[in-house]
Length: 196
Image: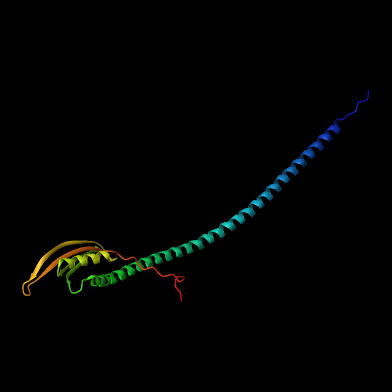
């Protein structure tokens, strides 16, 4: 029988298998390394983009914070101006109020039949003292006050007889109390409502 020694062939085959496995392993390690490097570059570019966006956003936030501070300053100044305007309007109304009230009381006076002797106002409550020729004059005066749009809640506090001894004239001394109605501020006329 012939014997063939196959040992070197098997050894050669084993070496070739080992080389192939080493080559595949090296190639797979290189592919993994290239993939990691590519992924690293991609992540770095995304990080740079995000940092740029963050920097831009931070600059915009700083810009808008500055604008917001300016807006808040303007709002505070406007609030102060509005308060000053309200104070000026109330002072103006308070300045004109007594003149208008006295004018209205003058027009309500029953001419040549009565006279005012004392007038006081506190918290829109007006107390008026006067002298009239008779009870009917006081009643007419109170009716005129009730019809007025500037006054309300008219009440007679007292009425009594007083005699002037030098001229022998009987007069009626009276005291009336009523409330002043606060006038609403005048509305600005719209331009559309005006006709030329």
